[in-house]
Amino acid sequence: MQIFRPRANTLARLFLVGIVLVPLAVLSLVMLYWRSTWATDVGSYVEQAVPFSHEHHVGGLGIDCRYCHTGVEESAFAGYPPTHTCMSCHSQLWTGAPMLAPVRQSLARGEPLRWHRVHDLPDFVYFNHSIHVAKGVGCTTCHGQIDEMPLMMKANTLYMGWCLECHREPEKYLRPREAVFDPDYVPPDDQLSLGRRLVGLYGVQKGRLTDCSVCHR
Image 1: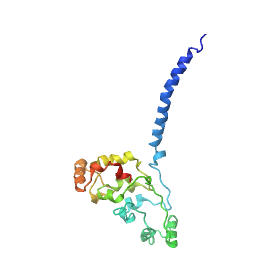
Image 2 (image 1 turned 90 degrees about the horizontal axis):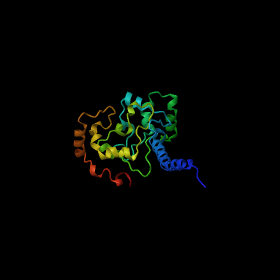
Image 3 (image 1 turned 120 degrees about the vertical axis):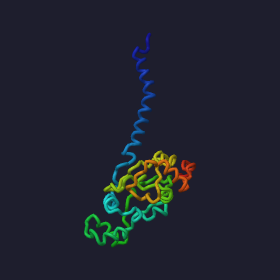
Image 4 (image 1 turned 60 degrees about the vertical axis):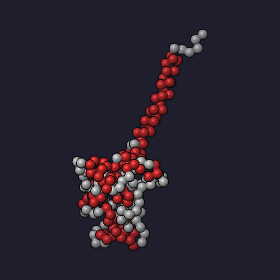
């Protein structure tokens, strides 16, 4: 007596194919999600206490990054602008603007504004702004064209693979130190030649940049 019908062979083949294809499909979907803007937040604006526009202040008025981010050349953290930095201008300009009410309240109460980090690395990742500035890494290399952002947004994933692109070949990204804070900087046609010179000039230890301990301490 025949126990299985002929179509059982077809079902068995489909089952075997499914064992292979289903995990691959799930893995593909996970990878697509991991690289999508839903997971990376690239291009998403972060709501702040005050809708600060880099497009206006940097692109329009030409304010240097270091005016607000005072620690960027000397410390690991670039720093947020204290209220008195904002009020050095806004005690004279747009003094009654409704959107600046939180700034005025911050000054009156002696309480700092609560800014929300846009580029927030995990706790197990060590990043030092000052060393990158000293080695000729421009602000826009990581943060994108901030002079064109009406509200600050994340321009790059900050995933390890993205960081390693620069750490493996820093000569592709380095610029002269005097151009680090220039949002209009355009790499020259001989960028690789320039980059190689800067690697030597700035003492970039290219052989160490991909060691785990550089970023994970």
